[in-house]
Amino acid sequence: MTERLVLTARVAWENGGYVASVDRLHLKGSGGSVREAQDQLVHLMRAWIETQDGQDGLEQALAQAGFDGVQEDTELQLEFVE
Image 1 (cartoon, rainbow, N blue to C red):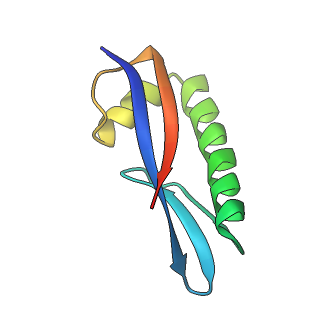
Image 2 (cartoon, helix red, strand yellow):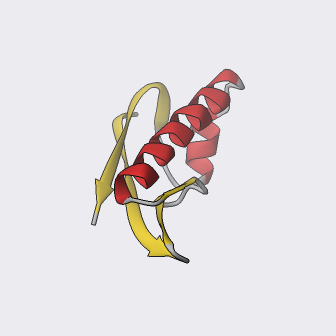
């Protein structure tokens, strides 16, 4: 069982704006600044977690992305790296 899962996110300059994305998940936030892109990604990530959890599919969705051993009580942490 995984007690804490750290999800790595990165911000890159793409097509005239900043794009924040989570490694191995198809979630992207965008904005005119790094902070805006990060904030949008955090908002999208929370909404995605709530949706998956509400459908009892969070553990399965994370397993399909390569994050094995995630349980209902696993703490998810989003970490931005350069």
